[in-house]
Picture 1 (cartoon, helix red, strand yellow):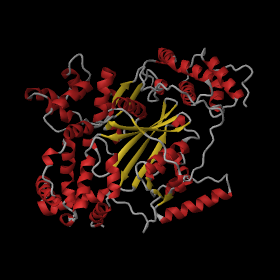
Picture 2 (cartoon, helix red, strand yellow; picture 1 turned 180 degrees about the vertical axis):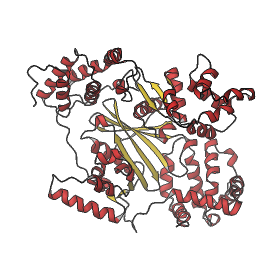
Picture 3 (cartoon, helix red, strand yellow; picture 1 turned 180 degrees about the horizontal axis):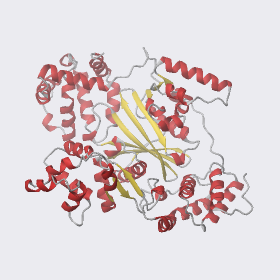
Picture 4 (cartoon, rainbow, N blue to C red; picture 1 turned 135 degrees about the horizontal axis):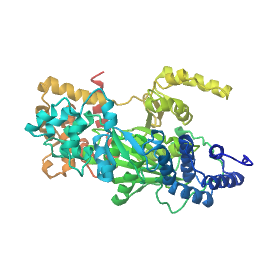
Length: 574
């Protein structure tokens, strides 16, 4: 137990002590936390560092409360935190950058969000999100100016070409008084006679930094907590749990539940609001499917949500799920999983302010879900997750986190280095790898291979090679004419599979069939497949375009012939 200073004179002293008690949950320390929070409630904070440290401590305590008293005090402090921000701004001004981009209530977030997320933000936040013209003016390039001619009438071009007029000035003149520059731009793009992909390319190419006033919304981590009927109170220290994922096959399958579409939409909104203020944009989250949201729980107030993708936006061959991590109603991180046959790429990321001893509990449970319910057997951890070109991954020591769980480097030289370093750590617990060594350890993807009786070492099926094989076929056989390649491929695949009722298929299933035709046409012996294998392939195509993608994952894992055929296509480029 730490003693409270006899007569603490400053808020800094109290915040420093509260931070030091973050992982302490004894009865004595809980009483001390309560006293500190009560003392700080009456103190004004003008130091931006202390303001943010206090905010982080409160957010952590909200996710990991000691008892109902602590939770009540924390909830009250966070609910009134806007008052602290208001006082800070009274003294230092409305846009003091020292407290921006930290997710505090009534502050700004600045980030170049993509087209999908920009539209999402404008739909929900209106004029609280706009182009950051101050940032734009500092750029040497002027990418938006090249788009103005597309939106303007012909006779407006002389004004656009005026060298004395900035792009900001022209756009501000062009949009209505009740519009922001961003709203004007997005509406112009909406009316453009072009595909969604072209509009997205035009917008993202403009590289627009957006400025978002998050206000008193749940986008602020201050107010991010969602309702939860039962709270798990932390009665003891947050112990690090040791798991060996290589023995997961013997574990009991965790329960998972499919949510209603209504509840799925709520989860997706919570996920987006947790990610965007932290400058995170995940492809599967941008196209999240409210009809396919599952929930599972490891207990201890933890919930893991897994969100599928809308049929028209799914990956060509892989299946991509994003995840949301919740602790006592507070979003504390996110996860991803990408499946193809028995391969399952998997990762979690706990937000900085919530990193504790529970990451291994969360990952172990997430891993079990995809082993037992989604058929993953060869689990991959990408090298980026353990620090390759990722400073955060290096500094957090994520390589050793996953190594202790049973992941091993695929590249033998890197694995040899890891084993040597692990031996040093076992002999001397004070030993730490230097950054240079961690960078070498991060040069390889990692693997937990749970395939039953594998005949040969795991070799990943490279979807990039399959895509390039299609490109090479289009160039070689059709002079680079993709449309011609599609028409010819569709005719041949329809004939090979004996499909006569394509026009009766639902729209997304037909879309999937059309997208796959050039690929399926590369399978040289497709016509010779037996009726059962052809029927199962047709089921796979339909499942890819179905309302939910989980059945597609299962059907793919059962079709060894299709796996072999795609492997042959990919290896044709080796």
